[in-house]
Length: 344
Length: 266
Ligand SMILES: Nc1ncnc2c1ncn2[C@@H]1O[C@H](COP(=O)(O)OP(=O)(O)OP(=O)(O)O)[C@@H](O)[C@H]1O
Ligand SMILES: [Mg+2]
Image (cartoon, rainbow over all chains, first blue to last red; front, side, top):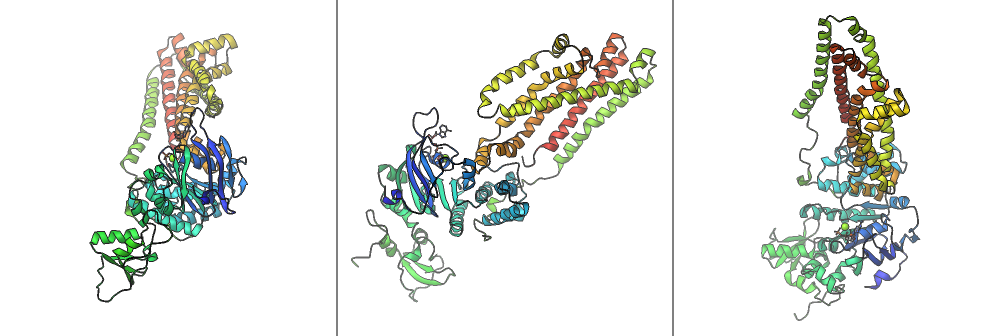
């Protein structure tokens, strides 16, 4: 475990202090003595195999499950004994199964907590429309529909909007993109990251998908059986320096390739354009795409070099395969510093 | 905040024709809805025509007249209405209570009791009450309540138990109190099943109330009994047909109410 996981910071938003949960009648703890700090404004991904206690950990944070022992702090205050209903209104929760109320319209689902908090109709409606807009559902079109009239993916967005309704500083999201096909899922992840850049919440996301964890997490907490914290670190470091056998076997093969997804083309030193080479419009990547995408283009087109463009599509440089190779840290390298080219 | 993020532009996510489509099914239900009242009116007209075609003797005329029939009908409806209201007032809160975490353990006991109430033959129950508590309107109401408690109690409990646990979780997880979850989520979702139970109780009560004549509480059973005792088939026929028509009419109205009160979106 690295120091970032244990050193208390002033900006710790959620702190679990030796929290333990044993379900009644169960021989083993579902969560055994878990200590975890989550900083304000960061996305922490809980990653681990099925049944390792991810959902239980989430529900301990908002006290949907009472801990058997240990303490939970929210924003520096011990919340182990406060009124759980009031606590939960400060913590948005997207449950694993979405859980929209089928007898309420989308608008009523999203506006339920604001109404409960005593907001008037007009203010609630404005909030609902803002949130539906935010998650990409045109309010006029979707507000008065019922959940069953929405696709699974749309329902998941409404679930996210509903959790955001009272503007809680903390969000708990249990596999929010679980029931979605890979393509839509990837797009939702991108949009989710953009959304987070705007709203800057403290977010805990559960997944058992390594790729999703690497993409979304500022830090990843890898859980083993009983919510044992196997490693808690940045995606880069987890991929390059797995703490133990369990972590590396859980990450599986392909960690080097996954790390390509963490670095953007614009972060590499690419070569200046030389006018001699005509731009093949298939061999082009944008600077804000990942190195993984660049490599994908190379493999698909069979070209050793791709043209890098800026956001407007204007070419700004060339990226040869060797640069990708040289920038990629091999196992044991310090991932924060790309290896310099040598021997050329 | 109004910027569109998490935008859905993919056609993949469009729901596939799940908006309400008025069409054949709506026509069919309208026709189905009208069928019962038309049939019942026809039966009543036929009965009226039959009685008109007969030369009624004095005894028959003393029972088959607007005043007596009207009074029996009102008595009958009062018995049914009062007992059903009492059943709902008892069984719904009891059903809610018996599905809450603590008292839930007592549920089998109450279900067994209600089961006994329904299993005892209704005539037996009425006579038993008449013998022990005397005869009269309230004794008849008590018997009806005991007799029709079970379906409402059981359906209230089943309706509440069937509510998807994850919805209760979602409600609690977003900060609704237990009471709020009960009233905003559980009860609305349980309503269709609860209404079905109340409908069954109503039907039981309309039928059983014909036996209330044995505790001297009146109702359409009076006509039936008179018909049997005085050996007048017309009176017997009038009483039984009216009781049957009433039962079907009440069932039809209850069905209508069920349809109207069912939460939208389910
Ligand atoms: N209500 C409960 N009663 C008893 N045991 C439970 C209960 N809920 C979960 N468990 C057990 O606790 C352990 C952790 O469950 P949890 O739901 O937290 O897993 P998870 O990591 O979220 O798994 P998944 O990825 O499948 O959602 C499991 O072994 C599970 O069987
Ligand atoms: Mg889970």
